[in-house]
Image 1 (cartoon, rainbow, N blue to C red):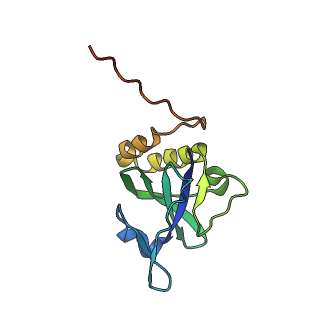
Image 2: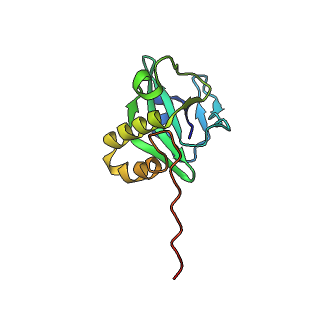
Length: 142
C-alpha cells in the first residue's frame, strides 16, 4: 500500500479552523488554495501536514476511506523517522511506505490518547511488513 503526505498550509493561520472534509487552506497571500489531490498511486492513508514557524512541519490530519481525523495535538514530523532519509518536504504529495505511515500513526496516537481508537482503526487497515493484509475469510453458512 502506498500512502502520501500532503501540504495543507501554514499552521498558525489554518490549524484553528481545520475540520474533517476541508478541501482548501488559506495561503500567506490571504487567498484560498485547494488542498492537493492524492496521486492515483496513493491507495492508503493520506496524511496532511502544515508548516510551523521556523520551517518545521506538523502532521495534523489523517484520511483513509471514509475516515477523516483532525488531531487535537499535532506532531512535528522528523524527516528521517517519518519520511526516510533523502526525502524532502514539498508542495506536491510525498509518497511513503507502510512502515513510515505506521510510525506517524503511532506518534499521533501517543500525542492524542482520546483519539487513539479512531487512529487505530485506520492503522489496522495496512501491514507494516509491506505485504497486503489478508482479507477476512467468510464464515461458512450453517
